[in-house]
Image 1 (cartoon, rainbow, N blue to C red):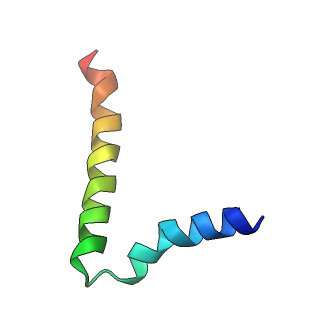
Image 2: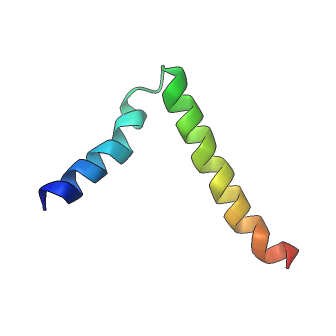
Image 3: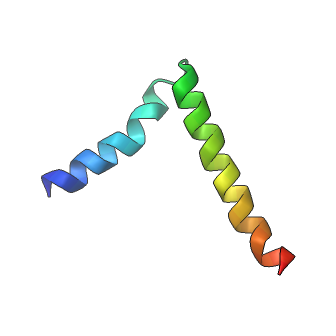
Length: 44
């Protein structure tokens, strides 16, 4: 259970530091993956 908590904390930690460039790049990557996931079924 501790491993699951660490994974969750690692996924949420960039959201706490939105002023850093790394967190902004991480969020931009997540948005890109979400848009790609929405567009791929439409392209097939």
